[in-house]
Amino acid sequence: MKEQELLAQALELGFANAALIDTGDLIFVPAFRPLCQENLCGKYGVNYACPPDCGTVEEMRQSVLRWPRALVMQSMWDIEDPMDEAQTKPAKGRHNKLTRQLIDRAGAPGLMIGASGCSLCTPCALAEGLPCRFPDLRYSCMSAYCIFVKELAGLCGMEYDCGPGVVAFFSMYCFDNR
Image (cartoon, rainbow, N blue to C red):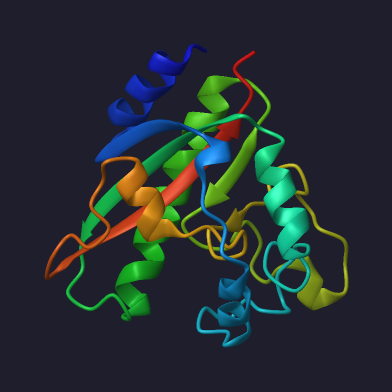
């Protein structure tokens, strides 16, 4: 699928915004990794897609940069309290489902970076001491990659802070257009 078709597909699926970028323009901030250790999402050490099991900061960075292009997708949700997991969790799940649908439509290899850590299995097989059930579908979040999402939004001409009562989520599909 051509890049402009990918962009159109993202908007057709319901994303509020979408933009194409070179992965080389992404800003990675290794100092973000310790934030994952605070475990605010509850996935640190119990999900293959999250630190410390997803890979080192440099391994994650290299897994993105192996793909020269990325489609960045943004969805916006009416959520009063961004810390209210009862509201944010279903919204992130819907966002990630749309991202997967777009990648499936694209029909080309690539890397999905989600709005949150992988939630394909509940609980993750890691918590049960088993290998990942879906290694080809597993996705990590922007934080695990140490991607500076606020800068990413600016690079794409998107708002990061959408104002009171509106929360934006971001994901990426990294691919090779050659």
